Image (cartoon, rainbow, N blue to C red):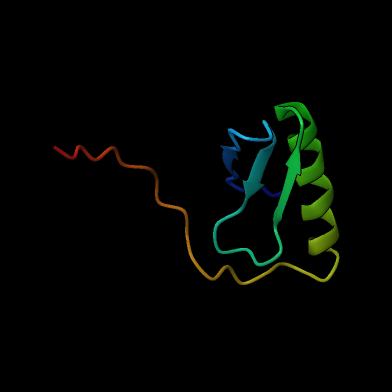
Length: 69
């Protein structure tokens, strides 16, 4: 079993959740709930992994809070 970090954002206009795996081309999806997004991401990742393990273009490091005056 392989584990990937999914970055999740929510569109304020539509309320949809959008998820993507940093550095993994094509590894993105959306859903009306976090549960739906999670399932959609599993399906997308499984489909992409049918062709073998990808070479990730970037590596997720984390998030940072920056203050601006």
